[in-house]
Image (cartoon, rainbow, N blue to C red; front, side):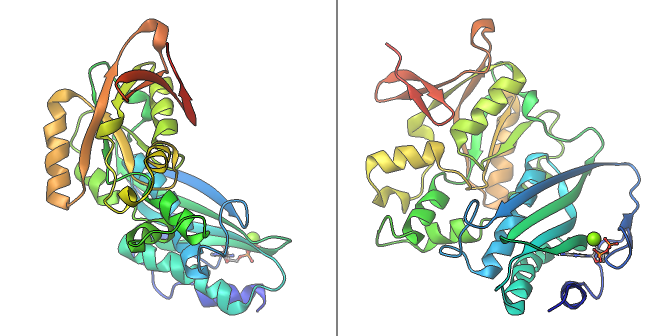
Length: 322
Ligand code: ADP
Ligand code: MG
């Protein structure tokens, strides 16, 4: 299929966002928004670097690429509006496969009334998918990782480590009886959009999405907020399915396993019950895992209590403190 046929095949017949003035078909897209802060992000996925066909169908490749981007919007407290897709197509990828990639994205986009408003289509050596998302948030309500404060509660949504377990199963490196939910979490993760939207009235909330493992994301919050974070390993929520794995794998994956696309955040103690109630109302599991403290000498550091002692948590491992 040539570029024009592909664009024609993926082009939306109608658009859902009322703010859209010009979608696919001109040199660029146009939309108009009044009184909102606009939030935008881009992520690029290279075959055999960021994903493989061994674990994802073409539809899932599309779905997951868009989900990862929507998760970034959610981590900013923003609601999704539009997406643009730049794709590098190698020889040997069928027309049908290309259409499936876009169908996977559309499936997720529909859930949020997102419109595909542009992109770029080129040929190259490797399958590369670069997705740009545009979202909106009420003025001055974007959620920054730099907003954590002394005495905040640290919480996470959902359970952690499942996507990594699903990946291991699909790669044939692990085998357990109950695997469906784990595989699903790897192939079709759900970004926490409604959850953050419902938290909009909170004055202050520091947020990060869990794409590289909670240990890494906690460091990002601690560093950009200039605070220290202390968590309890036993409080990190894991699924019953994850409990089928060895203790070592459970610990490793809940802390360092990426791509769960859950959220980790911090809020004032007095606001935490509101966060818990929103979770209850929406059926999103919310778990307190620790707290924020301030120590001038320990800014940006993260500590974990496990096996009866405190250890310094690193982005991808620990240092045992003696
Ligand atoms: P130009 O040469 O002006 O960049 P293109 O021929 O690249 O235009 O694209 C024509 C139209 O199709 C533009 O509106 C562009 O945004 C859209 N488009 C191209 N590739 C994609 C894609 N992969 N996904 C969505 N829209 C695309
Ligand atoms: Mg172009």
